[in-house]
Amino acid sequence: MFCNECGKSIPEGSKFCLDCGSPLPVATQQAVHVAAPVKQPPPQAAQQPPPDEEEKEKKAGGFWVSGAGIALIAILGFAVIAGATLGIIFLVKGNSNGEVDAATMSVWDEYQSVLADDSTSLAQVNMDPTALTKTREDLDKTQKRVEALEKVLQKTGGTAALRNPGRVANNNPTATKTPNNNPTDTKAPTSNPTDNPTDDGLVPDSTENGFNPSDTKNPTDNPTGTTTQTGANNTQDTKAIEMAAALESYKKYIEKMNELYGVLVSGNMLDPVNVNLVNAILKDLQALANDVKTTAGDFLQNNTKVITKTFNPPVLSLPKTIATTVEKDIQVKQEAERQRVAAEQAAAAAAAAELQKQQEAAPAAEAPGPSDTWYDPNEDDAGPPPG
Image 1 (cartoon, rainbow, N blue to C red):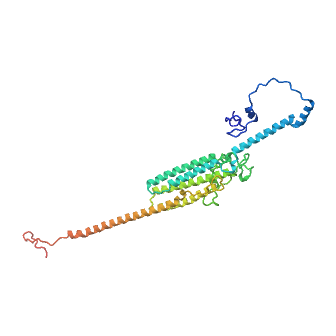
Image 2: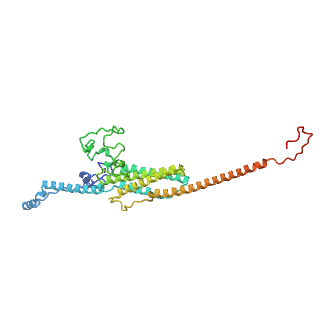
Image 3: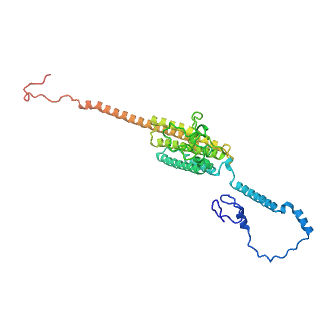
């Protein structure tokens, strides 16, 4: 026997489909229990009760033994069976809009695993170029893991209306785009040249579904750039959007961390320009770490599926560790550079002194001594040299 709705096989005797929960027709249920026909003995002439006894039986049965009474009993029995079936379906499927769905909680659990892995692999900050390059590779892997979680959340988190917003506009499937909450308005013209001309107003231009936490930012009310959920009308969608915001904030944190390690790998930390750049990135990382905590706190708040509400993974303290390590590394390099310059200056001074000494000794060695030649008048008619 198979379900008329989903086509799945159903055990005989079932009153509803165990896969989709659809109730089975009563005729099908009864057919399952019909026993093989049993050969009946030939009918015997029934003994007619005495007239007085027949009249007593009719009075005792009254309405319920009449045709209308039997029909009413059948209707009531069907209603009881249908009610019990729907109750079972409700228990199986449930209306979980008041709680976080299992898919979103699975993403949260995996997100915590990512944070735990990063807290271990990134805990040690080594300024060796090879170690810095290896850390950048680990950060690239983390970013891919977070992006994969975002895709899973978009496909499975929240309600179907959130995952497929094109099918529902403001919870009104029959409404056209409703600027200013006016269901009679058509799509208003826009001055934004980047808008999709084929957009029907049901799906944001930047996303394919309702998971777009960046659209809920309010730069005037939220200077730190954290994302807040708006528009969800049930707990499932609210928590799914908050989970998306948490993933987005951590992805930005990892991207900025990768940028920092790139400067540390290729930059000369004795150059004041690079030092100022590192300080600026570290400042941004502190703000992004606060965003990660804020978005995770939003997801944990009023979340009955989470027991532990504390969120402070060690990886978010990494900017302070990096700042201390980089400062020490700069001090060591500056001291080494100072010693190198001092040694070069000392060597140059010694070379200059030696050169000066050689220059002072050279004139004394080249100066002529007193003449020891006797004058011979026969050799030179010019006479003796002037006295």
